[in-house]
Image (cartoon, rainbow, N blue to C red):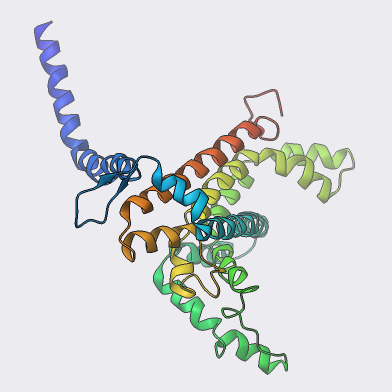
Length: 300
């Protein structure tokens, strides 16, 4: 018995050694900042001086005084409403095309996935900015067709939609998951439906969509979380302008922390974003029982 206990402890020790790099990174770079930001959200803290406890003062200011916060929240919600459905529709549409048996289809799948490899990168955001500037490629193409130029980034009514197009364009990761899900749909279901006289639209609505609802559900959650935390594209392309029309919550947090040096206030904003994400995620999980279909479940 003693030998077995000794061997068990040795295996435990070796396993701990193997996961130590991840464990140290998790504790120092994730768990500690997570807990520290919660404490700082109840303080006035500017890095230089020690934090001063203010209780819920930051949250009161955020909700009752700071009108800029409500504008940022509105912009973020609109951004999420545009990008999440848009990206999923594009991803599913392309996945349906890529699921067909065609010569060289793997090359096309790779090409469509490439934009997602650069997702959220500063380089892509700069390229997008250059393309949609007043004298950029897009307006040059419009002018070549004798159409007027458009202020893609200078018009408050259009600038947010322009940034949303960048996010929608990067649909590769969702497309790959949809493609894998489509491959798993049993062909026998389509054959039985065709025998019963169902057309392609009926097959898509009554067989394809229900069968891939778990992947749709997963993509909705992941893309919603990403959209609510958006920062890079708005910061690089428009700096939150014009007239704060692209001033998402991520930019609000960044400016309060690293321009105004209000780290306590910025921490409060980060926790509001976290709570919003938690609420939206819980609501999505609550609703999933009514529309997500699993093979091992008798309910739909």
